[in-house]
Length: 192
Figure: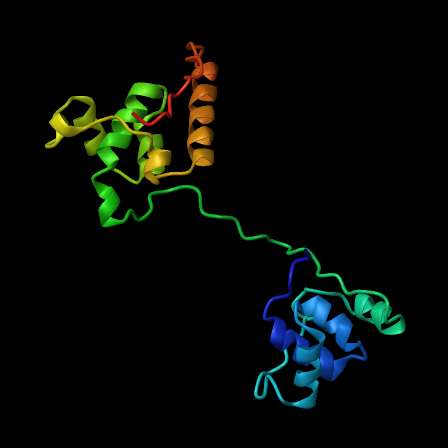
């Protein structure tokens, strides 16, 4: 499936008004049904929607439109985004109230299974504080009697990709410092 242009209906309005493309070409480019494009052209749908210029907004080139106007069998192709949007993967993030009590369990899990992670890495990964990490480490946390090490990925506090990246970065740091890199841990994810 091809990527769709931004604001497909407004883009379809502009293409209908400013080009000689067929309804089928416009429909396939905008991810719409040809009858919906025909209804836009007839003024039955999308009344009051201002056309969105896909050429000016770098979604398609004028040369591509000209090529497709000459041959109705050709299909428009959306240009790749010059700066794709990446998912935010670093820094502290909001943790819902229902999951906040799971953080100490996740901290205990990381301390036990990934001792090479620095406090700063755990802060970024779990959205916690250095103070909380230190209290869990020294068993001074107010709820230390009830803390059970649990995987933060399963708890939904971080993604497996983010955890793997942090562990790899910690292993690289240890290797640069000439320290022994701990072997990968086999985790038992079987429910008890």
